[in-house]
Length: 246
Image (cartoon, rainbow, N blue to C red; front, side):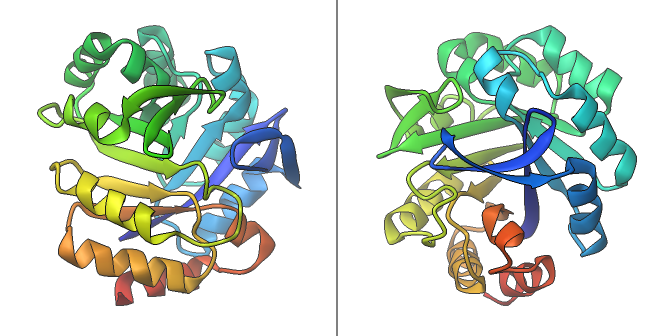
């Protein structure tokens, strides 16, 4: 599995939230410096989230995003507020993001998402954030009545680069990945698209557990690591080794 260090952006700073709660924020400093640190440690791809963009419905932290891209040579994927074609084009062609993550718009405008996935093959990632198995949208501010697996099934026939699946209950809590989430990831991986796990990775043991699931469900091919790297319970090197060991 590929390890993707996360850089969440708010007000131009690298931050982490607990369970997507904007009121439970920890600021970690300069995003470009963090990106350089993770890339130098061996990360092959970075996962960026524009938290302000998720609330505003359009990318906001453009200066910070450009600074990150100038600081590293590894590809970066970006989510948060990308809900129209103009934002997709701007991020991919103008800013230089490798691939964009779309969540809210995929749920609310599935036909549009399908058209965009076809127009930008293997450049769009389906972002599925869930609470109790149901899709959450608008920067996790709303929880829908759509099961996460049902949303994913709508798009398995399209040239989607990957699915990023986040269990909000685990995200930023430093409590590990629960067995239910591991089972859900396996079911989602069996649908056929590459799946990247997000939320809850705290120690190398979590990545070992994910790697074991990946052996049974090979389309589980990535894991996003956030707060654990910033708080030092895990290093990029240890994460990569655990993901490979299984």
